[in-house]
Image (cartoon, rainbow, N blue to C red; front, top):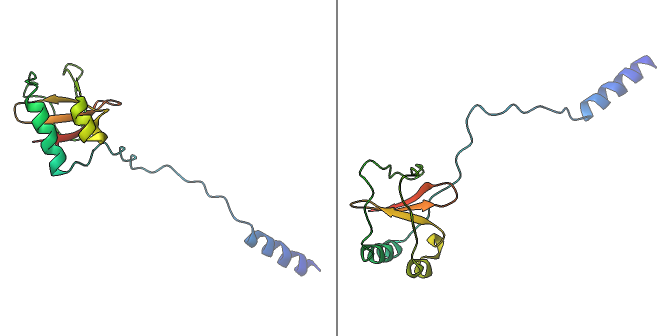
Amino acid sequence: MRMLMIAAATALMMATPIARSQAPSDRPAPPPSTTVNLTMEQRHVIKEVVKDLHLPKASGDVPVSIGATVPQSIPLQAVPSEIGAKVPQVKSHRFFVTTDRIVLVNPNDARIAEVIE
């Protein structure tokens, strides 16, 4: 009888799932995607509209890599409605220009979403 109880207890223990704690990963979570995918035609539309605006250029020491945070000292412009109508995925973004680039910025976190050469 004792052997039967031991066998039953062993079977019960093996059938019951064991909860495993999951230790947090040592790797940080990847940042959310901040880029916008633009076609060559959409880039061209943005360049053509922005070049006619004659906006002041940001200084040369501003970071212009995707994902970088834009300093608060850089004035950001709203995307013109003409661009928003033709390239809807950027209508809520802001932007600034450098001497040779148009930099689209995510307004939620001030991170660079796209750089147009």
